[in-house]
Image (cartoon, rainbow, N blue to C red; front, side, top):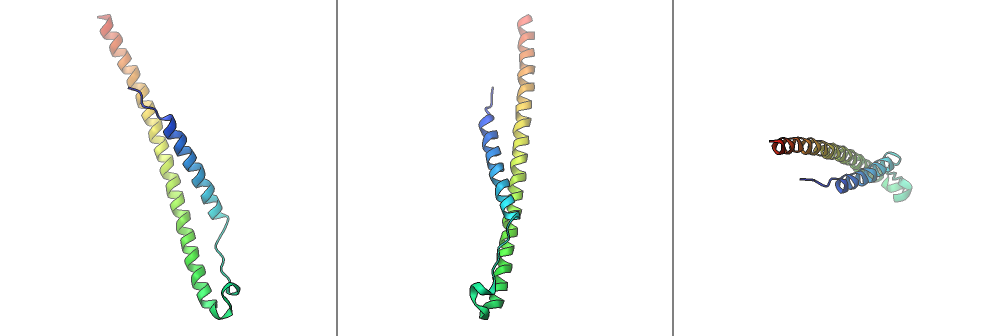
Length: 102
């Protein structure tokens, strides 16, 4: 039995590449809210909004890195599946050859 893993690997690699790009963008930027944007009377609110945006920003980065690690683990599992399939094919071939020799 052959399991087609190439499409899965390509899809995982594309997803990982997109996530790594997104994470790099997140690392390279930080949300900024100034009191000018809201007016001087809203400086306290601007600080609260900035903290909230920063928290969301950090959570997005954390989740992106978690997903990147998950894609790497999935790729490793696919590679292991391919390796096991090759071993099984070799073993079954040897058993078939042994049976044919009898």
